[in-house]
Structure formats: structure tokens, C-alpha cells
Image (cartoon, rainbow, N blue to C red; front, side):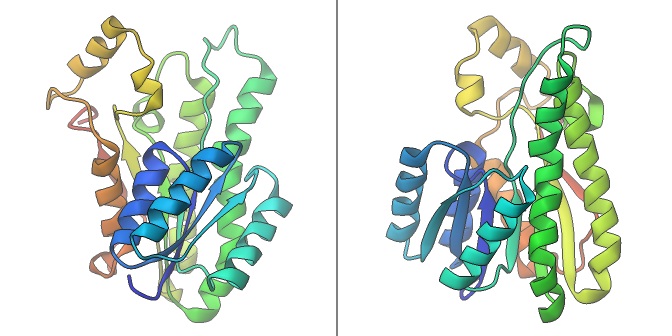
Length: 245
């Protein structure tokens, strides 16, 4: 990936940071977008630069198209046009549907689904002109199988699957691939805060009998973002230890 520019939304922590570091280790220059944790974003940039990459962090609310457009423009001016877009930014506001507010439903969809569309829309003109590029959307097994208490999150992630397939059909003839990765039960800050009994219950639903790592997800993303996946588009690659078979 030497000479290529990758843009990772939600790239300051967790899965997003692991993806950014993996792409950097393969030679890409990396820009990360973050919502609020400037300290984490600065730390991530430092790690990327120590791996030899040019790196940039931009605060951006991807649910706002103007901010997304401005961020893509800033990346192009600083690092070069985006070659690889990873839509990883996401939020959760869990509640049973009968208790979920319309505002919480809309907020999750705005970031997780609309945000991905905004980033794709902002990056596509340059990708189409160059007739090459990789887009990888981070969905979830929750979007494939549903999850109680996550009507908003599961809907947004299911929507990402449809978005992936629709855009893949639109741009396949332009040399651009669009795929999705669906993580299952992955060790992150969120799982780290779970009660032991809840964590054990989650692991028991995984046939492989263990929680996944952020690196497991990053490796799958790197494959789809690389040259070896040039004839793969519109696919959803599950990284879930068999959770959803």
C-alpha cells in the first residue's frame, strides 16, 4: 500500500485504530477522523508516525455532510487524494424498542449509516476520476441477525449492508470495490466494561469459544483494501468466530 492514502473514520480508538495501524504497517499514509477524544487521536497519530507513515487526525461529525466533505478536502490537501476509505465510525444508544426514544434511534442511524454515505459521497468523485479505489464499511453481525435492545444499531448496520451492495454495483465498472466487514464479539472498551456474567454469556454464543481481537478485524479489512481483493466487491465478510453461521 506504499504511496496510497487511507482514511479511517472513528480511527482514534478500538477497531478503528487497529485498522489504521494495520494499513500503516503495509505502507499507507493514514488520516483518521474522530468525534471527541482529541487525546486518543493525538496518540494514534503518534503511533502511525512511528511506523513511518504520514498521519493526520481531523475532528469530524460524519453525520454532518459539510463536515465530512471538508475533512476529505483537508486530507487531499495534506496527504493526497483518498485511495482507501474505511467507514468505521459508530455509536450505540441501547434500549428496548418500547423505551427507545425517536431521538436515540435517529442519532444512531445518523452516525452509523448516514455518516458512511456522507463519506462515500465526498470521496467518490476523485475515486471515479482515477478509476480505482477501495471502500470498506464496518457493519456488524447485529445487522445480519438482529439483537434485542439494539433496534437502532441493528437497523443502521443492516442498512450499511444494503449501502455496500448498492454502491458496489454503481462503481464496479470504475475499478472501485466496495465491501463490508461484520465483526462479532470483539474485545474493545465496550466489552471491557461488561459484567463478568454478561461477558461469559457473550463468549458462550461463539462457536470458537473466545472473544475476537481488534486485530482480527483489521486483518480482514486490510485484505479487502489490498490488491489481493481486486475481484471481490459487494461482499460481507463476517469476523465473528462462527457466531452467525
